Length: 106
Image: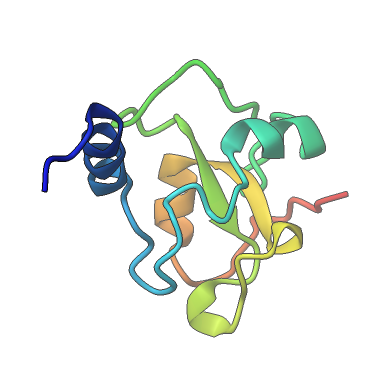
């Protein structure tokens, strides 16, 4: 059976989408992106409170990342209410401790 070009492209595209290891959803955290979080909450890091430069990209430690307010390891979910914008470096340091460095989210 011969595949059409459209079917081949779709299969290649689906192979490239990285999957979440825990829930098999795509890597965009169930449709929430860092841009959407910045529009909702502003561009301040939810952990340290400093502004996040939205133009930086991984592997820069100060690039934007998605932080779980209540860590997944402690029963947190991927619901948008539990997600916040953070620097990649702050998010790695925080890990699953849940420590917020005194910053209150509005």
